[in-house]
Each structure stands twice: as structure tokens, then as C-alpha cells.
Length: 115
Length: 112
Image (cartoon, chains in turn cyan, green):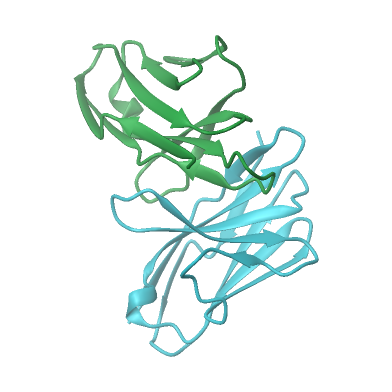
């Protein structure tokens, strides 16, 4: 089956620093990737759609200057949380859309803790 | 408005006790109904895609079915390792962005 990886799986940082999370599709090319945030015992909240070679599309209420997304290749998208604060602590999950099956495959997630 | 609703929110079963999870949807021009399994602290794992009413798919103890208004995930003789949150999702009907609308999930606990 299609595999999506995320790195790092867990990160702890100090308030005010920036954190970069990588999302890679390992065995298929993904022109579209998605970034989600998940709060405890809640469903997935879509943050943005990342399109290869173009600007990301952000959902309403998501600060694009705070959550920088880059999709530089067909297998890699990155999410940078800039000037992180404790309220940014969360579980971040990416997914990649496999056009051959029109199916989203998810990464294992990144647990971000901001002190 | 496109919507996906799952029920029940939580389900407790004894090992071997079969049951069904429900996913009802109102999406114009449905282009697939997806089922995922999510374990705590992990990303969702793809299970099935259903495209048309009457379609069924099976994987081990799980069988997914689709009608024009809802989908069911049947769990036959569940084992404790089937404990997880099950999510269903459908693509937004009005565009081909690939964005999914997720239900709130059903958290299944299977006791030995």
C-alpha cells in the first residue's frame, strides 16, 4: 500500500522558536498534500492544502504567516510553525493524495509540544 | 451543505460480539466514501473506498457497505486488537480539490 512518512514524530521546543515538519510520499507522487491538526479526542481539522509548485490554500481561520507550507517536489511538503507558542502544541498530521486511486494516505503524525 | 455524520460516538463490545458502525452523508455527486482506522497517537490508516450504492468491500473481520445515503462498517467477531477510532470521509462535492469531509469518528473498544 501507499506509504507516507512524517519527520519528526515528536518535537519539543521553546516558545518563540520555529519548527519544521516534513511529509514525504514514499512510493507515489503527490501533486496535492494536506495538513491537518488534531486535538485530543477530536476529529481531524484541515489546516491547508499544499499543491506542488504553487502557493498553499489555507482554511478559514488558519494564519498563513504562522503556518508556512512549502511543496517543492512531488514527494515532499513541509509545514513550518513559526514563532511557536504553547497554544500551537498539538498533533499535526499530513496526507498525500494518490491521483491513481484518488485516495488520501496519511502520515503517522507529529506531536508538537511548545514549552 | 456537504456533511458526514457518524454514529455511535463510542461503542463497547465484548470480544466476538458483532456490530455495525454507521456513516450517513449528504454530499452532492459522491465521488467515493472512505473508511479509515486511527489508533491513539497515530495517523489514520486507509481501509476502504466505496464508490457506488450496493458496493461492498471486506478485509479480515471488517466489511464496508454503501447505500445512497449511508455507509456501514460491519465488524464480525471483533478482537481486542480491533479497538480503535474509525473515521469515514467523503470528498467535497462541489470541487475536485481532494479535500475530505470527515465524520467525528466512532471509538470502538473491544473487551476480552
